[in-house]
Image (cartoon, rainbow, N blue to C red; front, side, top):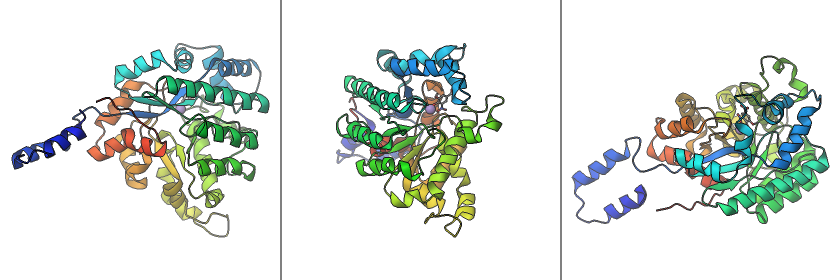
Length: 371
Ligand code: 1DF
Ligand code: MN
């Protein structure tokens, strides 16, 4: 019996004394009573066929920043990266054991960065389909534990739309993942609008997940491994989001929902200045203020930012209904992410929304809670 049911049953007793009610309210304001249901929303996985293609890319001399991490994970794993590939490839028993060990109810799975976006068009189209089929299989094998985002190949927007429709309508997937730029291009460009239009029409969110900065802004990120999660990923996705807002692309797709990780990739912190400098005017086509797009079209996840001050700031800035919990498995450890959502200074209502309620609504995840 979960807490809500328990309270419901209790409130049915006409004789419930005022003292008992005070007791219940006192419990409500303490951080934890019943178990917190948790849906982690940026959880990476892969399939052997894609790992093999990435290994091929790692063997080339391609001077692209993503190749650095691809080499570390797929070709020459180090002590710190060795566990990534086996964890990514497991979309079954071992992952669920790990979830159980930490009290994580569900993973919203997504194909790990850079997805299919570094492949030639034909390879990208067919591997996106294959990955979607495999993820859908994993979900139907464990519907209480997994939900999944679909991949598509932005390299071919027309076939991307076809795959997006198949993924939602036939495979029942929960939205899409795109790993930021594709060959240095961003989704605000009109050639990609069919993708934005399809996501809006399907009422399915696009998760813009990081990859390393595109070639055009790569140079300062080439030292100290700055291209990766330490700084480059956030600059890349933050830039993508600012482009979407200032281009006015979102004026055409007012209902489009975009999700970004890492506590909003610093965008919430920038909203005041973005509004001051980027308000509608003569310089650019946006009809709304950046903060208006951000509140209307975006939601964020906590993936890998376990900072209670940043969390409180984001809730106050963009509203608690737009914040979701994530681990970023297997790149980030599960235990601290769980501890964070269970102990962060939040009201009960905020905690329930961030831990699972918002994800259920935004990604249309149907949960099978055991009682
Ligand atoms: C890393 C981080 C790798 C994230 C990821 O996928 C990733 C990393 C290749 O630190 O190596 O998704 N992340 O989202 O922060
Ligand atoms: Mn990630």
